[in-house]
Length: 275
Image (cartoon, rainbow, N blue to C red; front, side):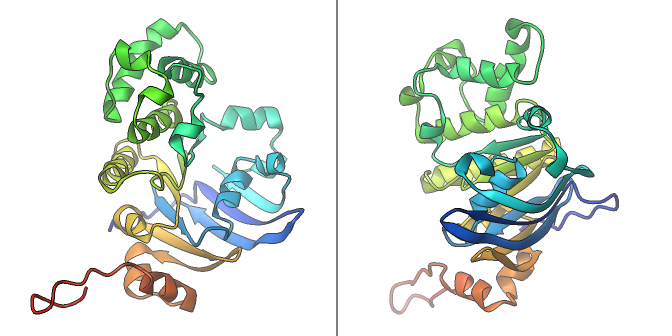
């Protein structure tokens, strides 16, 4: 587990909000948490507890799903509640980026990988694509992808799920945002690829000082990656603390239930004990 990030200059992101959908009132109820610069904070909870709704609220995209948010979201000291849609378009992707789940379905199936990277770059950059291309190829290499023209000419159906997830990560960090929101980024991956993607997040956090809001129900990945964890139950945060404290000394009954539900490996009789 990583050591807790300490900061004397205030949080990068501060959230205090409630939210609802027409068919789901009070999906979030007084949720409050901060993310410090350079910190990896996990939002943990069962499916349907409101984790992804928080991500949509931060990006001011909840209305697209028919939901409404109330409260305050401060990013770098600015209350995003009062930001216009034009201002949010400048923030999304450049200062706050997101890696969604379901990597293959999140890419445009009709566009080549190079074209999708080009669109992500042009959203917040000026100048000729050819001049920026060497840096983009270097970015692909940094996320463990082939950095050649052959890979850029492929379409999503011609790459693996793990490669698709890395393409999404590359698109998200192309402008080096201060905050990366990763929404269940390992749920569609096999165990080895999950480990590789977690290592990639840790390296991006370390090398770019990029804060990460890691949304997951996978407690083992949270334990491996995150500095702190906030536990969400039915739209409320019931516990928040250092990752080591959450896993070794959980205070809330719901947190203890989550920890107790982790799979145990039982060795054959006579060889060892359950752990």
